[in-house]
Amino acid sequence: MDKLFLYNTLTRAKEEFKPIATSPQDLTPALSLRRRGSAVGLYTCGPTVYNYAHLGNLRSYIFEDVLKRVLLYNGYEVKHVMNITDVGHLTGDRDMGEDKLEKGARREGKSAWEIAEFYAKAFKEDIKKLNIIEPDIWCKATDHIQEQIDLIKKLEEKGYTYETSDGVYYDTSKFKDYAKLSHLDLETLREGARVEINPEKKNLTDFALWKFTPKGVKRQMEWDSPWGAGFPGWHIECSAMSMKYLGEHFDIHCGGVDHINVHHTNEIAQTEAATGKSPWVNYWLHGAFLNIAGGKKMAKSEENFLTLENALIKKGINPLAYRFAALQTHYRKPMEYSEEAMKNAERGLEHLYNQTRELALPLLRKERAGVRSLAVIKKFKNKFLEAINGDLNMPRALAVAQELLKSDLSDEEKFAAILDFDKVLGLNIESAIKTSALPNEIKQLVEARENARKEKNWIEADKLRKEIESRGYAVEDTKEGIRITRVK
Image (cartoon, rainbow, N blue to C red):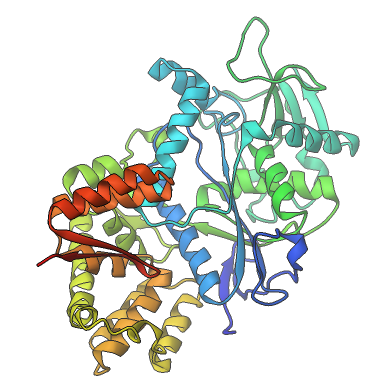
């Protein structure tokens, strides 16, 4: 196995990735290991489902998907867990303000539960359009209230908590390594960037583990607890759920750079205090912001956010053009958004498809079954591995792909290699070249049938097959995927 190097926020250095030696029973029977010790536990912070994910959010999920694909490409099995925050994320930076789900419910005249369900579904549709591999486990905060209460109890028993009039708080002064992830001088931290300072907190950095329902108020989402009716703070869910599914010590935790100083710092403090074990997570990876004009980050709080739907799909741009654009900037560097940049990315993606199509169509017509099994030329395989294993250097990986396509290798060799590289790139190259020559209405029917099959709606899938065939196209389901051919 080639060495994989990742930039670890915890140490501020690139480190060789060495997974925790894990036996199959430590993860799940559903995941078969290719070899003992190759399993990787991966936790990625998921969406707060009170609104659509914006392009900045989605950039983080693309980076995490690339990481997962790189791990798989290197021969690791991955157990990937992602949370859905459907309660307890407050509008203020430091546990004050309003619950975003409750706020979203009032905004749209729906219940908080309806808001959470709607936007969770929308998020899953977005990542599907970006060809992001779904996690092995989705875990909703509202499904794990007891686990969060149990974790708070442990912290209380160990003397890390105290109560105020509005909740149960974690005393950060009792955790000596509180700033080990942020590397910040605690004296420089300031509270109240958006909301008033809480005078009952012992330390500016203390954070809520459980928030009480205010007297005289009936929240849509609240639960009984040993401390009174209320709801969990934002940070506690990730600690409780990650430990439930990955154990008290696992390999990688990811998120955006905005999670470093507060959310992830608080996760470490509460988890390591509760378990008495350090480190909780070996590698922390963070993706940089997506900026819009003027270098300002895209954020819902700034009301400047664009979604996949309004920025690309409604304008007729392939959503994968955004994935292609994201691959052109290293995940730890800020990415600049503009409409022109998206159009350029779409042209670049289509150029890649065209290059591959020119190689593939003659081969597909000849039905050269051996093409997919050809060994990828070692020279280019090594270059590609060097790029992706050098802290996920996807701009370099794309350059290697272009170098390959312009080389003097045979068409068969180039085709085999580019499909192999696409296991990491995730640009759906093979699918694109097989359907690109089809009329748009046939493409739409093919996509609808694929969706029906994924949802196991076999009646609808069969109906769509007949509709495609009635328009003069044969449908063949192969182990490599669907094949559509014009019937002469």
